[in-house]
Amino acid sequence: MEVTVPPPASAGAGLSSELEVRIRKRFANPEGSFLLNVHFRALAGFTILFGASGAGKTTVLECIAGLIAPEEGRIAIGGDTVFEFEGEKSAIMRNVPAWKRNIGYVLQDLALFPHLTAEQNVEYGLYQLSQSERQKRSRAMLSALRIDHLRERRPAEISGGERQRVALARALVLKPRALLLDEPLVALDRPTRSLIVSDLRRWNQDHRIPIVLVTHSGEEVFALGEEVIVLEAGKIVAQGRPRDVMHAPRLETVAQLTGFENIFEGEVVALNEDRGTMTCRIGPGKIDIETPLVRIVEGARVRVGIRSGDILLATEKPRGLSARNVLPGTVRELEQGHGMVSAYVDCKGTKFETSVTIAARGDLALKAGKKVFVVFKTHSCHLLER
Amino acid sequence: MNWEAFWLSVRLATIVSAILFVIGIPIAYWLTSSRWRWKFLVEAAVALPIVLPPTVLGFYVLVALGSRSPLGRWWQSLTGHTLAFTFEGLVIGSLLYSLPFAVQPFAASFGAVDEALLRASASLGQSPLRTFCRVVLPLSKAGLVTGFTLSFAHTLGEFGVVLMVGGNIPGVTRTISIDIYDQVEAANYASANATALVLLVISFVLLSIVYGLNRRSWVVSTWR
Image (cartoon, rainbow over all chains, first blue to last red; front, side, top):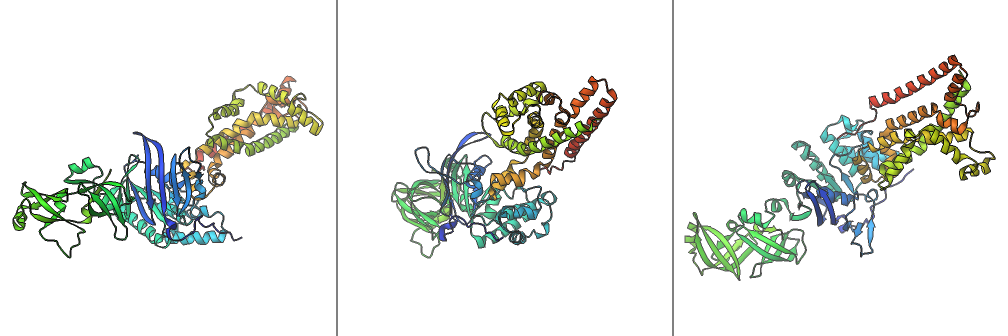
């Protein structure tokens, strides 16, 4: 008997792999109850949910997997809505049960079936296929993850890293539309970890599905990161590439303490996705600068922080420069500090505090009233929570 | 030794424990998975035969089976005779009497299955029913054997309910424990002793099986 697994409900190409998540849910943790309120998109590839324990990361995964229901929101995979409820006044109510979602979920404790061998575990979800088809698919998956030698073993008889691979194989063999991993690598040593990750990456080159990975380890974020979402007490406080997000302080009070001399209120005016940047209009002067692209909508209010030491001053408009932000302005004031000079530059009403050496002040003949150009890199702009 | 009574008891216990195995599994599944707020009332009702005097249970079963009850009348219109003082009546009484001895071990073992396994199964595309058959049941083998064995042993030795519902009709409702009672009434101690000893040995062997199984824990325990 030849039966095939039904194709994902939306088999369209293009955007079909995008996972869209909007969740509102009250949830309890040992420190009290929080309102979980998140909205993000995960494209094909790794998206990392990073945060302390109790921030709501696992709850987000459980909502996506369908194991619990949000109070409000929408969850869609490749345009196919698996959950939608916009509150009592709305008539739309959709909640596809977990077992019909075709979303892979590797739980934190793996939850391999103890009464089945590794191969039977991998075949578990292929129930509706014929014996031979089942075996063909599971063997292919086992060898893709390099665990074919463990076929006959029970979970209790294999190592932690091997169990991790069996759990991955069991989820991937179903060709899920998205894969959710809850702290999957936390118990593994580093070499084992990076081998598993590279195998998973290789698999995903062919399948191109969103992989949402939960972790509380900053190291892991850098090891995997294409996109990281930082979750704090149920809210997204930062989002972007690991090197942008992880070193950027998340709150303005923290930012001031760690040396952001320049903090501007602003608004996102354009997303330049092809260039990996976005344009923000900042400060009282409403000048446009380029900042790293984060997943945000046009018109959103942001706060941009720039360290004074990250800003260069030039007396002529520089050319052939990689820095994307070159703004004309006027020096208003100089202030001698400890071996450094703080120069305050007014760019159409937006004031930048910059920092130059005493030698540079001399070379550039900086004084109040001098016309200069303020220069800084896109990645010197840190987006802070609003 | 009254072999007729012995085999009647074995037949009764086999039928009752087999039926309880079939109906006890869904009841136990419901008890472990339901979140109904009044569930505790059902749990109490299922456990009632453990504490209730068998004569009380037997009395109400007798009333329920009698020709003035709806059940009794329905049975009578179907078969032409009443349920009281028949083997079928004995089966019904025993089902109620031994229900907790099947359901409680079943429910305990179902409830002991790691919840994470059920979630994993759902994420692997398996419906709750399939998850139950493929994960919960195989991991509850010891509980299933325990429930079956206990309900068998408990039915084998029952006295009060049988006496109330079945009376004492040789070959129909005279079970092994009634026979022992009869022998003692007739001061026939040697025969009573032989029968009692058989019952004692069987009960001990069955309980040894139950405890032996649970000691070896071929309940495959969950692991991390």
